[in-house]
Length: 84
Image (cartoon, rainbow, N blue to C red; front, top):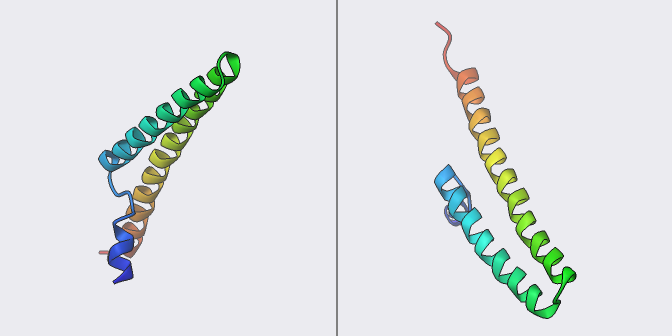
């Protein structure tokens, strides 16, 4: 039962990854705009850039992890394939 629920939280395709990255970007820009209101001037702008920069880093990591998982699955299936 827990395994089925756990599979809901696994990113399987690039489309799912891009949806997650989009949601992260929306949250980051909302948080960044709040920082701009709280800290006017350079401080708020730097915090806004930090929020959006974190999304770029997280998005790259998510996409790299998907590629790694796909390559690992291909390698495992090739290793388990019967030799003729």
